[in-house]
Length: 185
Picture: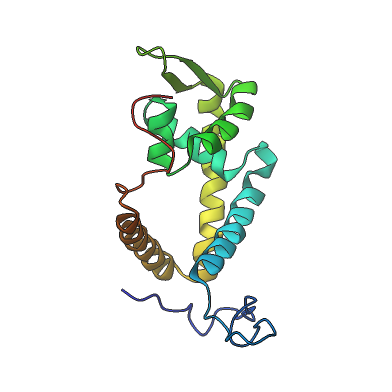
């Protein structure tokens, strides 16, 4: 399903043209390249991350760390499984876990396999997560107000379909994080 732009009543902002496109191309003999989907989506990801991070800042939390805490509220998991579930590389997840462990929001202990480390949500993490979920709801509401709830719903559906199709091109299972082999840490 194609995505529709926000309604005419919403605030329109100028669309910056990425370098290397027809209207913002590089000088030289080579023809301009079309808009790069990777560039556009990475820019959008950075923008929405900043918005959610702004709401999490008073809790000294990043939205990426919130995602980790939220996943652990459902079930403790080995680092490799958690990385896979969150669509992160293990090294990125480890970077996100370090400050959470220092703040005693999560605990990490050995698993049944000596190569495995299991991450648990600590009691302080549960307390912070309750407050962080309110901050997340505020950020989510701001996005839905700016874009329209129906648009956000369609966007989320389109992103899920897009992700599944692109992962199939890579030969990866849905939501697999590169570099995260199942079962070991």
